[in-house]
Image (cartoon, rainbow, N blue to C red; front, side):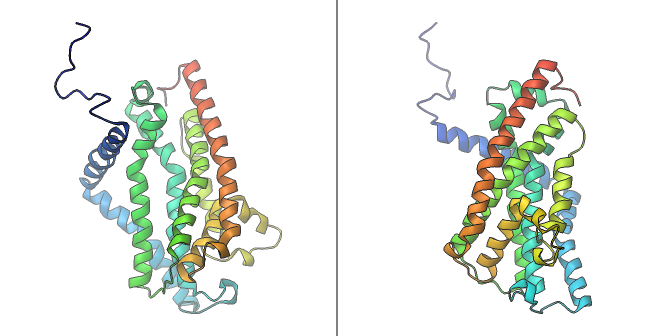
Length: 289
């Protein structure tokens, strides 16, 4: 009957407002599909923790060997080298994982043969992929906090935190890097193999974005490359906000550049992703890999 009441337990627009549905889906993807599955593989959990911490101690031992541990180097604006690379590694890992996250989710769905079903579900494809990425984002944030915590509690890094600067810089860095993540996702939709965008980004930023050494020590002819990625600006603002208590106003320039990068890269990434998705649908290759 057309006027029959919905079955008991069936969500309606009155009983389940939009915000509640969003929170429910976020919970299902983050906790049930993310945490419970990930934490059930204990070896993977252990290896993930090792992967977070080994580079920190490796570069600490290298700094000790070179006599730079605890020292304040002129090129670092008064910060110790240990503090410099701890912040660099914490946020370089955060951004690199963020850039490759969406592409990895698509690749996993391709390998399991479920990508076509994802794009045919009642929830929009973008929303499904966004929900699927939530747990990865939680892990990225956790890794960043753990690395900074080890720097403070074990390696003796002194933090003088300006919370508004750190929060704003982190958000802008995440948003400005999302555009690169969309480009990587479009590439994986097109090629069906590998993740060269994320791999190249990781290698590039380690050498040119001021992660392990200041941009100022690079040869003058290639220093301009450092400013082609938002991480360089983000690290400048974050080191100031975490180590020197720098205010938002004093970091206006790098924050503004990250906002400009986001305004350019996110629309470009969305355009490339949607164009690639339309192309794979037309070609009938969305389920192939």
